[in-house]
Image: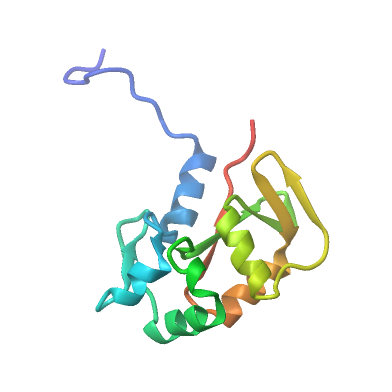
Length: 145
């Protein structure tokens, strides 16, 4: 019998723990482009509580590439999710992300909507991240079931 123990100890599932570590650098709070452009030091906090800083020059670059009406709706960084069993696709879950990618001319190839997930070729995420460094992140999606 254990003394001083408040209740049964549940060990975290090893896969869940690993995913938490892998996704630790993913932004916890995503901010509208308009807000980031106003901040003296544009930044947010990650799941692991570290600071995530945005490059003001890259923010201005995407701002100039999108219509002003999109600036208040676009939450940054954009999140692209990958699944462990599919290395060729990623998915997004936000219509504003889709609209921004469309305006930027990055939506191409086959797309598939499954529930609230819009699957697309992973090269779309890679192109966005290369063109706008620090404004997109790839997160590993939790395993289904």
